[in-house]
Length: 355
Image (cartoon, rainbow, N blue to C red; front, side, top):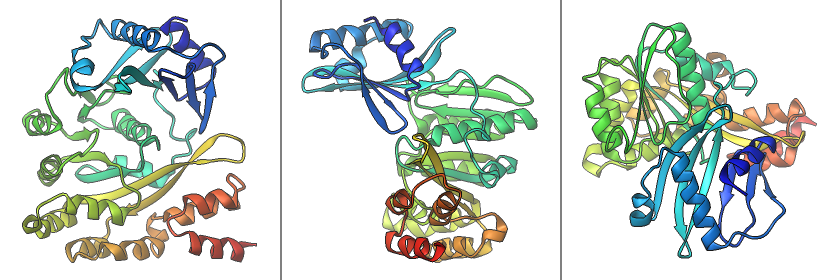
């Protein structure tokens, strides 16, 4: 089977990911399930041939990076079909690939059930907004929805720095400049330092990986830009602790002060198996009010959860409350609510009280 056939079948199966790994038949992931196609298991040689074919489809990309470093990230498009984000890697001495299927169309936040409290962050003109969650939780899709909302409604210069570019944004009311690591810039930090000289209004940073990138992003937010980025954390309190802890101890109090000034909100999300066999996003939304800014500055991030819980009137919602509402609306099972909750014991009690 040729690569283009595999990609077409993945779209037919509504797969989110394609796994090409030696010792397995061609495998798809979708709605939290693994689907193995009928056929022979891939041998190292045939897997390598398929991956070489992928590199040709990606504009004859050089395979030197995967052969030298052991992994490589890139993306490519097939006209009339779809866009694909690729991670190639070496495992057990052979080449393998994980391919994410990305639609050409911009995601619709209403169809994806992204709440208004999240989309409202597109109205901010300065500060920092973070979208957090584990890998594969839909962060990139939420970012794309926010950028799309800004693009359609504001006169702004939006600059994205991504690794790799997933969603292609067409210029609308805004001008959108999209930069990709390796092909357009050598690193997040280098691109971030340069972006301040490129007249941005909104900066999308695909991921904050180290304290240098976090520091530069905070500086960009301090200078009056809206910075939107991601972290692989769950919960607003954990996100703030993770950012602060990435700095040397002598710099941490200064970072707390800066974060207390620039942070506008944190969205945490995860994908939860639904009763209809699909997966649905669950969200926690923290909006940085005066109480939360004080807790950040005073190193009391552990108290943020209680502020979120008591601030529903301001648009905030905790992850466990969101999950509880999904059970009440018969979207997910009580068991899944407990599995994905931040406090399992408390969730069990709340579910019992709801009966």
